[in-house]
Figure 1 (cartoon, one colour):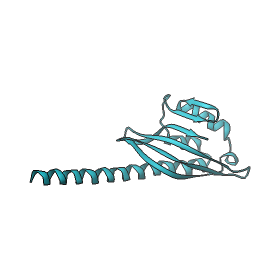
Figure 2 (cartoon, one colour):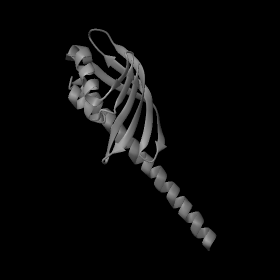
Figure 3 (cartoon, one colour):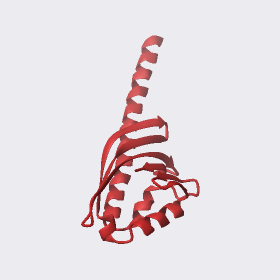
Length: 142
């Protein structure tokens, strides 16, 4: 009987873990969908709601590492000042993997459809659940 209890407990735990990962993935994808909409409306502050509002945020791009939420926003505003610059953003998610209980990494592609010329690239971002919300704490995009 004890072995049956342990076996059933392991099955229940495994199912709960799988279910939890599905919920986490759905919530992370929702954040990214909101980012697509905000970016496509040239709402860069709205886009940045998906990022951790902290000086510890790290963004790694063609110009090296940027530290901090405000500096990252400032760079976006400088480089994408108008709707012509932001265009329409779509993400293609290639992989979402759990790092630990409240952290995931997401690998994918971004596509900007713009009148002035399309821009495409790849990214790897790290999401962490902070105060009940999924936030990007590190972003590598090129």
